[in-house]
Every structure is written in structure tokens, then in C-alpha cells.
Length: 132
Image 1 (cartoon, helix red, strand yellow):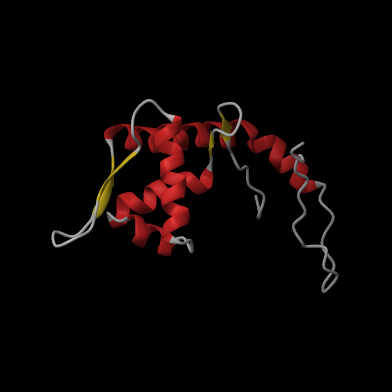
Image 2 (image 1 turned 90 degrees about the horizontal axis):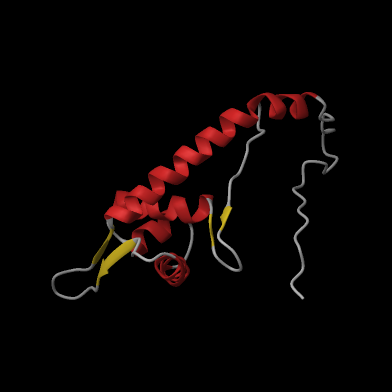
């Protein structure tokens, strides 16, 4: 497959979900040991990263990330055992979904119109449900 990919978001009801962005943030925290470094690596502010982590920690019965405040000892953040398991589970679900959808995605890709040079046809469009 070319650029075609399946993106997975798991919704747990109203205003509670986990998807590729939150999972990438968790992986970046695991790699860097820091919320601010993870946020910078992903091009987001510390505040945005912290809000996403807080959202995940409130979503589940167990914390996803544990953070130590800065100071003379230096701060830091780490995935909890549950957070690590959440990343593994999400990635496993993502692989299974991609595998199950592979032939259908190939079929859809085969009937795509080729974008014309300089036509602007490659712009991403999205239809989102408006909140009422």
C-alpha cells in the first residue's frame, strides 16, 4: 500500500477516548522520562501534554503516567505498569485492525483517482460531527 493507512481511535463514551496522538505521547514519555521533553519531541506545549496525560489518568481507574515535580532533584515522568500495558494493548489492537482491513484498503487504494500536479487535490478534508 502506498500512503493509505488505517487510523484507530478507541472511544469509551462521551469525551473519553484514546488514539494515535495520546499513544505517541505515552511512548515519548517512556523514551524521554519527561513530559516536557516528550511534548517538545511531538511539537506540543508542556501544558498540552500535561492536559492529555491528566485526561488519560482521569479516564482509567489506574494512573497511566506518574510524574515527579521538578526542583533540586529534577523532575521526571514514567509510564506506570498500567500505562505500559495500555500502549501494548493499543498497538496490538492497531496491528490486528490493520491486518483485518488490509485487503479492503488495497481495494480502495486501487480505485483512487491520481492527483493532478499543482491541482490542490491532495488537500486533506475531514467531516466532523458538530457539537450541539
